[in-house]
Each structure stands twice: as C-alpha cells, then as structure tokens.
Length: 164
Image (cartoon, rainbow, N blue to C red):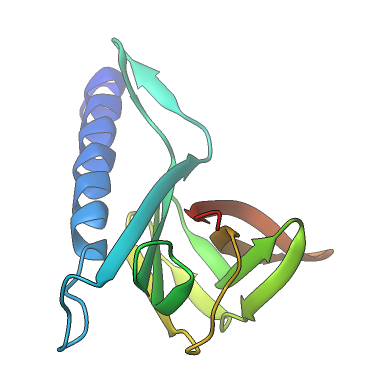
C-alpha cells in the first residue's frame, strides 16, 4: 500500500493531467462554415478543497466554459459548452447557461439533471444558442447539485461579452 505522500502526489498529478485534458477537449472546431468571423472565449475555474503536498497543489474540481460567437464582440452567440471534473462522486447535478447585462438575465438555458458522475470522470454539456444579439455583460456556465434543501450552486465559470 503506497504511503500517504505518494498517494497525494499521484492525486495531484492526476488532477493536473485531467485539467489539461479538460481544457484541450473543450477546444473544438467551429461550424462547417467557420472562418475569420467565428471566435471562442474560454474560462476555467476551480472548486472544492485544494490539497497540497511538498509545494504541489491541486483543486478537487474544475469547471470550464467555452463560448462560441460570430464577430468580434461576443454579441452574436451560436454555441456554448461546459465541462467539469471532480475528484469525488457527484450526483443529481446539472449545468445552466446564463447571460447577464447589468445584473439582469438576458439568456437562460436550463440544464437537464444528471444521475451520478464517478470519481475523476469528465463530463461535458452543450447548448446551441438562438441567433439573437446579446448585450454586454457575462455568459456563465453554472454547476448545480440537488441538495436536501433544493438546488445548490456549486460553482460558476464566466466569460465577458464585450462592452459596446
């Protein structure tokens, strides 16, 4: 049986490799007609307890967002994707996509509740956006889990929609 130090070091390495893999899998090709006017914004955030050993630290979970849009400012979306990875088990979760402008919601896509993901698994969801103009603000992927008192937000990852 490996020592606690070796077990933590292996866990740190696994999460580091997983973070890189998650970031790479979120980068995808645009639509068939993709050209210079199609762009992507991406963001990654961490959540959960960060474990450290000998100066090497790793978070318990990662949540990413990939927002694809037409033009330069991010106002004409066509697809949004999100993925998360967690070192433990997560049950009864979903990811919503929300756009806000000055605190007001301008777009919402309700995620579908999922059963369980098991330790270290990667999960991705995608939503095709309506062809509609969005004002400046933020586009967020929000990870929820169903807690005993109702839905609980776990973490959100956001990217900016440029000011006009």
